[in-house]
Image 1: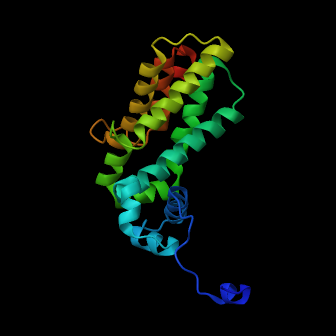
Image 2: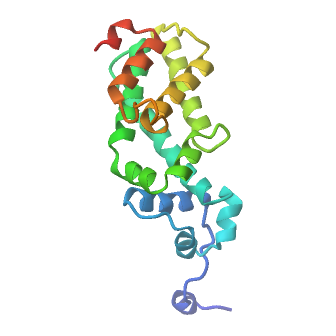
Image 3: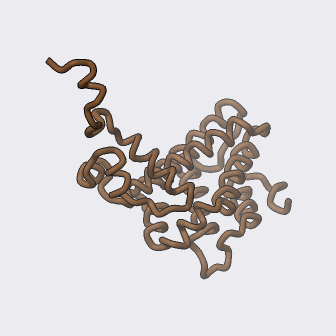
Amino acid sequence: MVSSKQRATRPPGRPASATREQVVHHAREAFLSGQRVDIQSIAARLGLSRASIYRWFGSRDGVLGAVLAAEFEALLTRADARRRSTGARRILDVLHRVNCWMSDNEPFRRYFENEPLSGLRILTAGDGPVQPLVVDVVRGLIVRATHEDGYRPPLEPALLAYALVRLGEGFLYNDNVAGVRGDIDRLHQVQAALLGIPEAIAS
């Protein structure tokens, strides 16, 4: 039988409860501090193998996608909780907060500059970890504005949400040819038009 003293002095082994959430937590810490998200380092800290992490997330891109998806979801939720507007303006104000965050956030910009190709793939893939979640969260925002504020969207909520998210992708980081990358003001105008807010287009 192992005594309490022996248990106390035994060197730590593999954590019994290492989880997906812990992997995302450590990856988020690295991302926000501007460090490269190193799967081997995260695995070592948690007493896991890289293979275990890849079984959960598929790849390093899957880990980064989980981090970014959670950041977007949290930001959209906080922005809606803090807004004072209603209806279509409520949706526009929430999206504008998110767009400004994406444009001004230093860790996000640094990551996108260092890993532009994988960044685009992670953020914009229709079957990826980020875009479907963001579209669904925006759809939920539209539905709440419909039920709580009497907003009448010009399109079916899922389609409108998809269009708004894809517009954001194009204006913020995916459309250099059109000369609109990072142009928050023009994105605000186009999203206002799509939401049916003519008075916001020139504001």
